[in-house]
Each structure stands twice: as C-alpha cells, then as structure tokens.
Image (cartoon, rainbow, N blue to C red; front, side):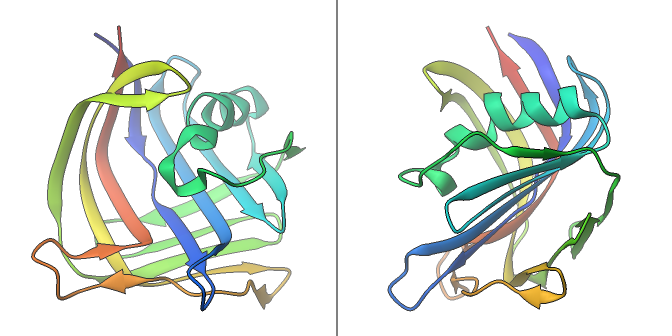
Length: 178
C-alpha cells in the first residue's frame, strides 16, 4: 500500500425531518498528499456541487477521487462542480471545527466521543483504499452560505454504545491504496 493522503476530512451532513440529506460539507486539510498540501471545501446542496480551494488541482482531486464516493453522498445527484479558486481557512482540533471559504462557513462541536477507526477496504469508485483516522462525532453542526444557514440539522445518537452523528471531525487521517 502506498500512502496518498495525510491530514483531516471533517464532514457535516444536514438532514430534514424525513431524514433526507439537505446539505453536505466535506472539509479537507492536506498535510501531505500525492497532489500537494493545502485545504479545500466540497459543498453539496440543492443538487449543486461547489468546490472551493486555493489550489484547484488539489481540490479537484479530493472531490473526484474521494468525496463523490463517500457514503454520506450516496444516492445524491452529483453534477460537475462549480470550481472557485479562493483561500480556505480551517480551525480544527478534536473538539471543534470552524472552516470558511468564499461565502461558506462550516461549524461543528459538541463532541460525543473520540475513537480510532481503520479499514483496508474503503471502496472509492471501485478502487479499494485503506483508511485510518481518529473520529470524533459531533452533536452540533451548521453550514451557512452568504450568512444564511442551510436547511436541516445534524442527526446524532449520543446514547449509542459508540455515539454516532451525521457530523464528525477527524485527525491523523491517512488514505493508502495498492
């Protein structure tokens, strides 16, 4: 296995009362990758994909090879993204996330748990990858565009033996492939 990405990828998924996804924000912080370092933000809402990053080749790679294959977006219409070359600022630790790019602001906090996760069979578009990370599900999260919150809310279960949430922070994230 060859390492292709080291960094973090916190995600905030908002759901409506029927548990349908209304918005997904995938925030990327690349400490090292085969496509460079930097930050990117992938936002899906209302059937539109926005891709924001200062380094467009890195942002495109993260969206095309990773985010579009995540379980969080399974079943969503995924058109070609609108690419915006803008700085992405990310303040992230295992207690909270604050990220902004262009007119988008992502927040998550209220950590329910912190635990290690690893698999050697994460399917990304038919290509198996190994993934290891520290995961921190969050009780709260929001996605705002142009100052207005997107509809929906984070769905979590803090009472489960392993608390779950549609918003989570990550650290020490390593993706590898054969």
